[in-house]
Length: 505
Image (cartoon, rainbow, N blue to C red; front, side, top):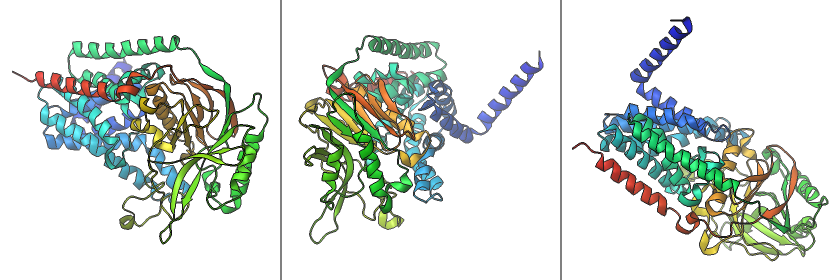
């Protein structure tokens, strides 16, 4: 036996010893490694050893031990996957709070994985049962994570895949794809060759089907609807400085006024591109008018202030549509506010202000809506991280022709955060077969068609614009757009039933 073989065996022996002697640390490490499956790395193959390793640790454990191991897995998973949140606190000169915020958020989100571990240990007897129950519970907890405490469905397991397998979300949604992914990964702990081959074959078949779908999908554009996306990449530290506001606005105006090869119908600016409140600056819309193409509109993010007699004014993170006559043709107020960024939960107890400028918390808008503006197909606004919520999209009842996602990822620097954000929101386009135009102050601006293909984009820190023909939506709404989570619910019910039927006689 060679020295290399001896060293390899010794290393594996020590690794197994550590795995068995320190299950808590092992669960934490498995969770952290699993986070590498997401953008921008997409090392999806790491999910199998990580989930299988957790299931081996959970085997024949008490529910209390399962709760602890599940929580530690989640703590590692969310701490590593959301490390970039600390940069937002550094940008706001609260760097000392950043690491605590990451660990605090990870600890809360780990409660969901803790319940998965505890219930799996409570209900499972055999390894086969364990796989089915664990996969069902994980997917259910991802779904719950999207709604409880305003929700935070970031980095659901299904987002680990490439565009071919993501085509599946047009039928089963991202929750359904997460379930199948966890089922295939967890099956490696079952010691059942049939189950491993079967679940792997399902994913391979879906990948091949998605690849075929993409190969047959034409690139359809509205040749007469030309749009410009503007990315100014203004550093967050300068964005709200009073002495920089006019200079920042002038940068957007100058990029918008550059000559286009074809007549433009719309110019798009990102979230809060205009930092002067629309209701207090009577000359503001006249100034913005200079950025509006002839006969077209400017779609921009801005701040709307609603003054109420005897009360503090209400402040909204809004989208405005301004025409060439300096009139506001439509508005939308953000529904899903970002905790700590736009409001502070339990503000009186915590005693801290939100990270964005101003002492007042933002107010919640009334409802999601589709804006129908002349000369443009109807569009649904999704401001910032509203695009990460599958339930935010109105769907087939009032179908939009395109999504407009205004955002600002300048908070997070050159981290994984902006890449993960883009990877998540583009799945909304696939789920509904509707193109999505994403415009960021600094982040990754992109034009995405109804199959999730990124047709054009601007990189992080890049100043510039994209002129493009608006992609057409798919002719018919997708199955998911019609039925939403129906497939997911059926899959979970069948999985729980199979797990129950696999109990020992």
